[in-house]
Length: 127
Image 1 (cartoon, rainbow, N blue to C red):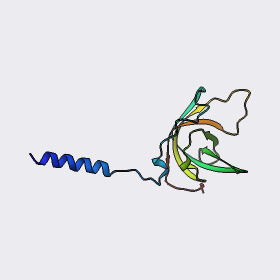
Image 2: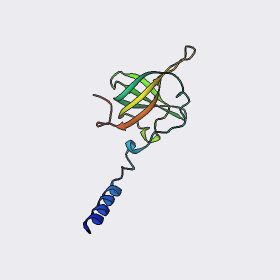
Image 3: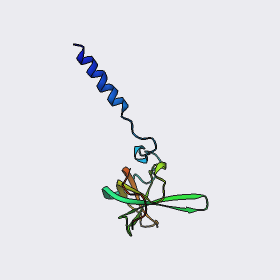
Image 4: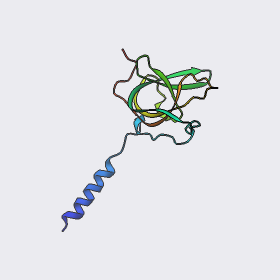
């Protein structure tokens, strides 16, 4: 009879001991606000594709662009990229919805809303 409560306590303790790394960007949840174009029509979806984050600075502004495929890829701008992923040359695996660009607009990148993102093995620009 004493075995069941001890087993339950041991299982609960092991579950509580599992905590995602606070320094790992992959542990961050995706922001749900600040996606001003999330209501636009979805024209394509990506599921677990590898990309690379490239940071560009103009004055005091820093912008992040995800390139997919990694080598000579198309630039994508994610409206909900977590701040912890603002690392130049960071390889990521992401899923996203690509949103439409209206005919009267010009974008330097394709707008996307991330549905998931995680770091990928191998940091740095491709060889």
